[in-house]
Length: 303
Image (cartoon, rainbow, N blue to C red; front, side, top):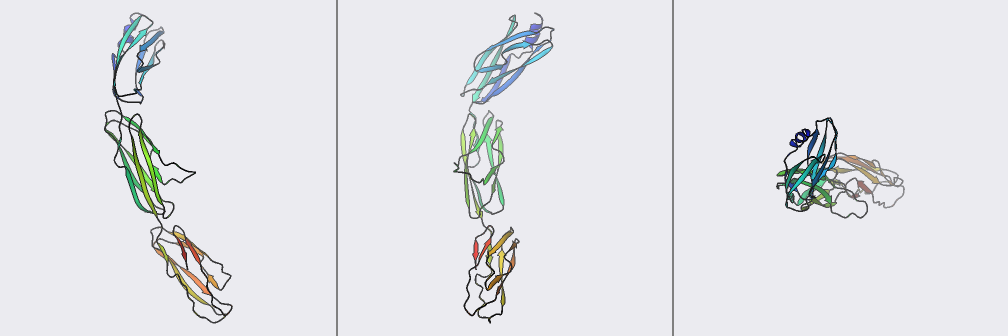
């Protein structure tokens, strides 16, 4: 067995250099203890606290190998140099040198305000945010919303991801989509990019939801004077000047002298619809009535 120990120990690296590592982030390397003999071998590893070996003791079964993981989580920016003693069957040993340079990770964002501007209701708009890691250590990040909700609120800004990992001297693209919902509503949201073990940056999203551009051909339908028991028909038009279709509904009781034929329907994009209004008086008097027309994603029209 004395001839086997040197064969096992010579395959163990003399030095494990972690190079640059991130503060408060787990960095890991590994090596193998290989046992080519026909007998099991007991091992143990003594090391300083900065580096953790998993496992640090155990048995290497015959004709098998055991993976040893070395982990380190530095709490501050510093140079960490240490030794580890690997002992086999309390008969043979080897010293492994360990080294690393811990640095604080730092992520920069390319903009702190993302202005979506005016977006038509029913539409969406996408913009980009770039996270840059110019340091020599990798950086792990998460993005959290800072607005404090009171009760259930609707989301308007959607991020392509809220966490990730950026290698040193690299960038990461985040896509942000603004989805409209309520016409005339201005939406605002603040987010924080939290670098694990490093800095925190804030950015805010702004967007305004535009209503559809619709109008009515006339807000007054005047039938003037007509003979009793006769009837007269007039047309009004509902216009939709927007790029999106919409629906309309006219709230009116047709039991009186005024009857509206088309009380609901669809107004296509960049088009209009006709609404027929019929007046048939039953008594000799002046008639007046107010009618409400509700157009989806627009204001109420009155005629």
